[in-house]
Length: 294
Image (tube, rainbow, N blue to C red; front, side, top):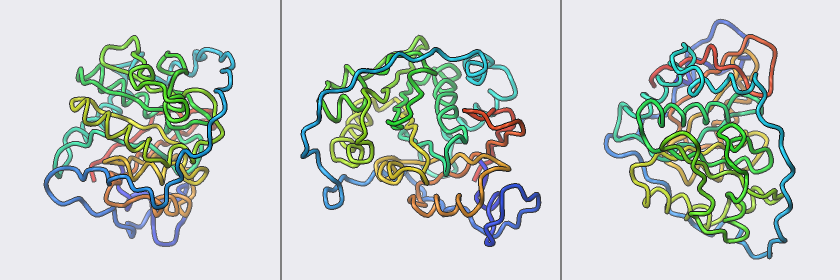
């Protein structure tokens, strides 16, 4: 992963500028030992599920992935490619950190939309499952624009919203993919109560239950962009580690800085620079994804 000092400076200049002054330090490393456990859930600033939820809305039929979209799942369809190897490099950095034990609950977020966050989450999960035969679960927390069910080929429902709003049993919302050891909790039935239902003790309890029940499993949370939604700041309190995706040459430094300040610094493992030189697409190409240890 790329150090903060490699992509940001005190003047907040654009990522398009070629000469970067290493003036902004990376987040301080955690003390040796285990990765900090997620903070215990509190109810002081968390809205509770006091308003009865209406029946879930029907899910509209969705088109399958296009050939172009499928080609970006490099960890599945091009496992020996340079792009897939960079994903494997990131996986290794998560598995073998400099300090303490590897985190098992990892949040993938970004400052702005369309920076490759969801695609990285899917590829990273595939890398864990296929490359190391590790059990891994992807939780799609982008409730308004979910994509993991399409990329990993599972049903959208029942999913996260069905558990949080309509009490679907946990085993029912876990969907196994056609890839061994890889499961998905999709976003679930459409809901316009995204931030409200994620900022609950029930959501925090779900993550803790999954973490304790499946101790050998890695859980990757695909969350919305920080500057567009409140969800990442809420979910950051519930996970052990955070990876921030930055679209090189596009995302403004000040936007990245503002985003990082909303997240707990001690949990940020670093930035993944996703440098797409082609035209902006729905999900950025990972061809020049760079990884570097903090």
